[in-house]
Image 1 (tube, helix red, strand yellow):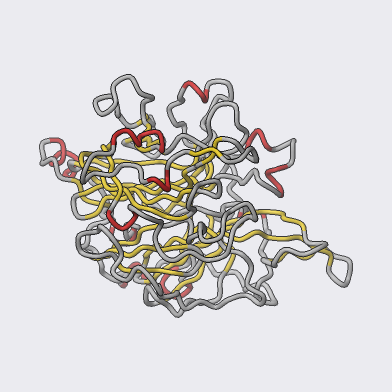
Image 2 (cartoon, rainbow, N blue to C red):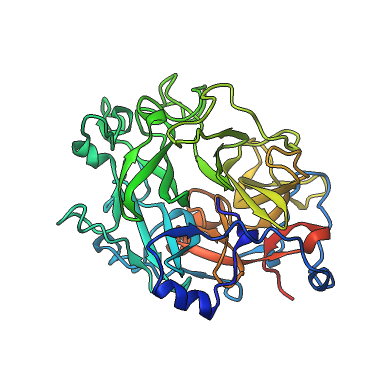
Length: 441
């Protein structure tokens, strides 16, 4: 993840210089602005932290923490032919970030999408699409892939379908990532999930995951041999398998030994980069970015776990104000308390506990590895997201309204679920050190 605390304000001089500038691209932010808040900034009146709900693990459901019309909007992404009937892009795991290219802001968006005729992104989908814009409000255009694959669907930068592009010494799709057919339980299978796009040390990297219906389920990374549109190839560390080690997990239809750590993410700082895996592992990349330094026995973040610890997804690290923020997604499960009231908590699944909202929970630390503070609810229904900084210095998060269960699975709401949404964030300052969805004043 790029470090948003270091993102410079992109002024008129920068824009003019960039229009006539070089072809290089640097991630927002630059490494030059690591300064702590100035005395004037320290006197700024930051919003207050809300008291932590008790006991630890109780979910905060206040409407102030919801993405609302006054603090959020759905990105007007360019439609593909498959999007015409719905009138917008169907997307899960929305990812958005901002970079500076030739002195001008470049926004990128991607996420998990589905194929025509299916109601979800499984048991198969057809890869990863990318959109770009010069402003967060657009216009958002599909990445120009026409010179790479003339006649193919515009904006698709990687797919299991691209296996025919493999050449000796250059793998685009590994055997474990190809589409395949089972014995009749699902038919065609193989899907790519939760992609992220990053610019690091002069190259574009795509981190994504092969989903539950794939031959092997887990995270992988692609590197572009051109620009943001590619062409992309697989890094060496994923030629045979996803990152990390396999373990028993996932749905029962996944074969033993086929499940690895999902929802891979990338965090960069200076010239170093780390892989982040759900829900608590990380690993440093080799200098050549072709694999992680230690492929097995990955270290774990030092976290303040719930009791019991529920299933968490979508781990993402974001740096701001000199602190490290560890984002994760957790289901708020509603149940009946002893006094008859409704209890909302990040519980494990059990009888009487109903999935309500897929929330963004966050913890903060002084170091990447932790120890991390107790988690708090940063956004209701905003789980499996990322935080980023726009070219004006504003803080944003993404959301998608999970249609799989709970609030957004209600038939009355599914038409507004699975969206490429962004929501404003607020920081409670160097003393509070929390990030929330922008609350009402």
